[in-house]
Length: 297
Ligand code: GLU
Image (cartoon, rainbow, N blue to C red; front, side, top):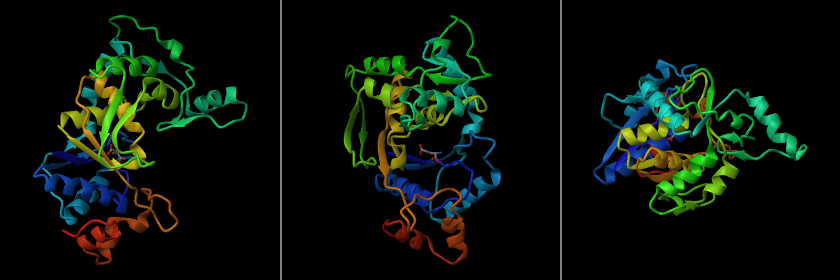
């Protein structure tokens, strides 16, 4: 078993991150497996080396160990670009210049004031730029615009590529936000409607969380992805990408989110629950384990 913790170095590690990392670590150790750390720093406008150092220090203090050097997404932009080129040539992508506001407005228009459909990646794309699907055979993927996955083609092809025929699926050993567990199946039609044409390359980054996470989990041989239940729906996007790239689908273990007293999930800016703060106040690693409901080490 290979698990990983994949933080973005854009703020302090808080109790929710500690829970995710400890759980991924404990699961791997219980099976004599390996726990990896990966730094998800594609958003270079927000990532800071100081946060990365702080994250490593906090994880080390919690008693976690991981092999070095760690994988850093900012070192892999060439890999992402090469995979985008591959998808572009296979006609799964289209360029898109819509702003967030354009998307919001176009998605609201037909419903006359009704709230637009929101998927794991925000408002479901209303298809404005889909007509840009003018694929010049042999042309290079554009790098000066955002690229969206043409979900209709991608989800239908992903269903066919797999031996099961049209059924898309993954195995969940934790649970989704509505207690989904076990073999999770979903159809291409559902994904087209509820998720839509997600951005696979942001203009300012040349990649996206979805593309990078899928390629990196595969490159690191991750067998069990342990992460918060807020990413359960996004897993459907990841399964489709795995099929298109003919990569194995790992087992997924989505866990409950750690919430504050008001029931709100913890955010990066929630310094009150930063691990460094507990450390400064004299807490022990086992105190943190107790706080998040994990057995002591
Ligand atoms: N960098 C992502 C986050 O911090 C990781 C998500 C994942 O584990 O797939 O939310």
